[in-house]
Image 1 (cartoon, helix red, strand yellow):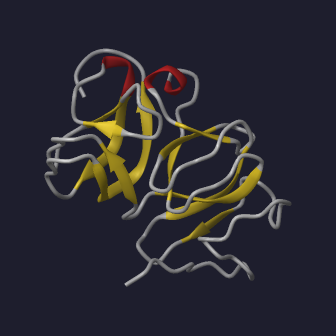
Image 2 (tube, one colour; image 1 turned 135 degrees about the horizontal axis):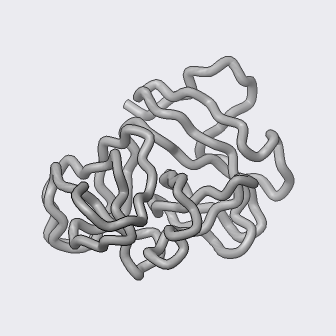
Image 3 (cartoon, helix red, strand yellow; image 1 turned 90 degrees about the horizontal axis):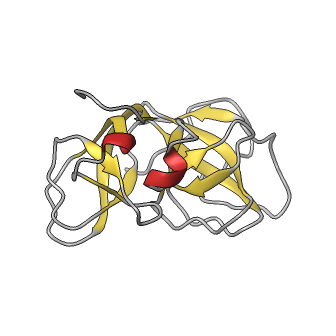
Length: 160
């Protein structure tokens, strides 16, 4: 069953992207899978479907990498592609599909990578994504359903 909007905001289409803002960037809606989606702007580069993204304080997004995760802790997951300069919705929490690297195990900690928008189970001290895990083990890089408890990036060392 597809995820549905469970908030009372009229006109929300989670797969629609807009050249002009239809909502105030940063607007959030509750979802039927227990998560939320936030309305964002892809201001500097296109966002791929199922990419993990960093969400800035101004609700601008970029595909996550270990490098940009250092300066932005809030993350989400694009369930549809968003062209550069367009607005759209990204999911935070719930059961989003997320691009994971090859040979990623299920039910383990996930980390940022140098590949934009892709997460992996290979430990990167500065890029631990707290509150997110995959639900299946994969051999090829692909998008899988993950369990996301409002994840964020931790950029410090130590135990996770």
